[in-house]
Length: 334
Image 1: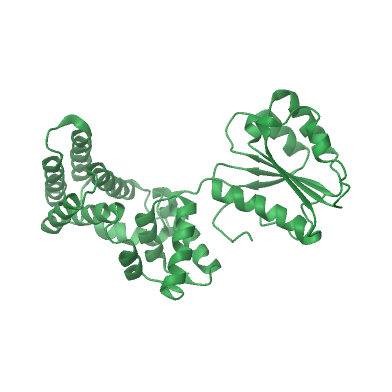
Image 2 (image 1 turned 45 degrees about the vertical axis):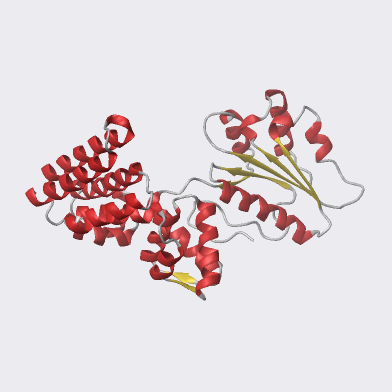
């Protein structure tokens, strides 16, 4: 079943819709690609539970093989043929794919996947002209991830707030498969409602959470707390580069907000900055006390610390403490 999600993809095919046509699943997001392929196959099986399924890599598709794969079967009235990695399709097989797309078999669903990019672009353009069904599985932007998490939770029979969704992203990362798995597990363990407390308990000690705690304290001027969090993180084995990454991310968000056009609504402002809409309010609060000059100074200090922790200094811990102090000082001077 294809769960609803924040993508530009079409909805899953309804029963039998994929039969008699070609579905092009286009994009690099593996989880969405797998779900789109599964939905197309499910559409065929809903029409004919005994339908054959054949899956293969496009790189192995020899000339003439597609005609054999899509020919009527003696053992089933319907079949699904999934060809993955169309960007690796041998040039000599491209004409066969295009020819089939123009005249598909009525009891066959051909599903093609392509990661996007320029390789094989000519064939993609010709397939679109042949009016194949296109399911776009584009990588999500950072501000779309909370919506994805919220819909995953809802699809699993639970719910999660935007704030908790963002914390889950900071805890797990931006990989959709990991986020979907975490949301499903938390729904099961937390009784249907994923709270921030449940996430913190479940992912206690995760490096990303600790790093962002350091950054949040530093950019809001809570110097003592930031240093305390930093020392705890380093004792816990958090990689110094994760701390500089979190600091840089927090400062970039503030700089983008400070430089954004005036008068934008929160939704438009969120897209301009590249954050979920709810975080605009958080960033506004963090921006108080900062000047453009202070932000520039802090960003430079974090860049120096990043170079230091990657080998430019003997003592990475000291470089991080110096960066936290520099960020706090730049804010107070702003």
